[in-house]
Amino acid sequence: MTAIILDCDTGIDDSMAIVHGAGNGARFVACTVTHGNVPVHVGARNTVTVLDLLGLSDVPVHAGAARPMAQPLLTAEWVHGQDGLGDAGIQASDREIAGDLAAAEIVRLARLHPGELTVVAVGPLTNIGLALLLEPRLPELVRGIVLMGGAVGVPGNASELGEANVWHDPEAAQLVIDAPWDVLLVGLETTMRTVLPDEALQRIATSPDPRAQFVWRILHHYLGVYEPMFGRRTCVLHDPLAMALALEPELATYRLLRAGVELRGERSRGQVVADLRGFDAPPTDPREPGVVRVVDVLDVSTFHERFLRAM
Ligand code: BDR
Ligand code: CA
Image 1 (cartoon, helix red, strand yellow):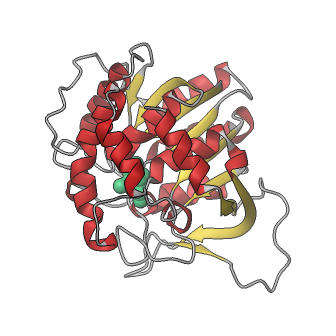
Image 2 (cartoon, rainbow, N blue to C red):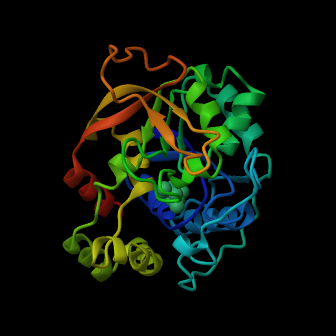
């Protein structure tokens, strides 16, 4: 089992990441929630709903940042539905949210279990950035961080160049990249390779498993969002891939890059800019501030198989 703090903005693919983790050896120590796909209180409600549906009612959920550090709040209901779960009429859990100071909770848990926890961050990085401000030793206290974010050398999704999780809070993302830890950046350059084959969708659609039925219900809206891009009803699995690589890093090979976030550009603010030129020797220390790990080769079919077995 891998002990995980999941920081999320649940969200259709965040929900699928929780399903993936629950079925593939994640032990959720806590879920912390940020603004992003939906306002933070909606994301927190969705997070308890998904956990309860999986029988994980003992996993505490803490709400956190209600807005980004240095720009107004923007949400993405057009991607995830007004309720963040595809407007499929999912019955919300009425479980109490454990707290509303997510960043402090991340620090508390990291101090309590030094060297044991992996942070999986699949929303804007405001909570993680705040946690780093509260506890600059956070990188030493956790095993590592896997984050879904960025679009290295490929187009963005929230803007022409910006991937949503970084674009929603570029300053926070820069804090995370500049901290001395091994940041595995699972960006669109990788997640866009995970397009679900029709047979996989068919298996989800026809499975009697309640987890598959939940995923199939929330997927309807998401498949519609991706239809113009792929010319058929399918989708990619952004957040589940970050979860999968946190649990099973052997699903991919990696390389290190120097990178940073564009904080000023009029059209490029929120872009992850990486040095892909190849003139200088590549970095060798993943903990060097400003160095990120990105995926090179990904075993997509094994990843899909792991995703399906979780339901
Ligand atoms: C990321 O943005 C959100 O819409 C998804 O939940 C995912 O975390 C993809 O860019
Ligand atoms: Ca997300």
